[in-house]
Amino acid sequence: MTSQICCYIFEKHHGLIFNPDSIRILREKYRIIGCLTGNLPEYPRQNNELGLPLELSHEECCILADQEIISMYEIILPLNDSEQDHLQYLTELDI
Image 1 (cartoon, one colour):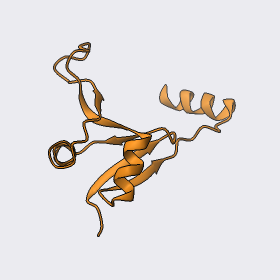
Image 2 (cartoon, rainbow, N blue to C red):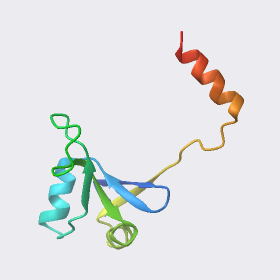
Image 3 (spheres, rainbow, N blue to C red):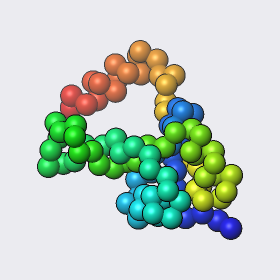
């Protein structure tokens, strides 16, 4: 069975789910609540009502993946850029 729910693992600590239908399925069918972490466009400085993505703990991700409810994809950030590469990127932005 292949899962249609995509979970993106960020820094090997927690998972992020961006699809609203997937979030609804997780909450209604599997009783996984998670934590909404994004800001709503209408209220960018509002902290009481948050939006997508849904953040899942490492444990929730492992349990759901073991039961083949979600498919996990690791997000790899380019952390090894040199200072020279960073400065070159900033100068290109000024153009």
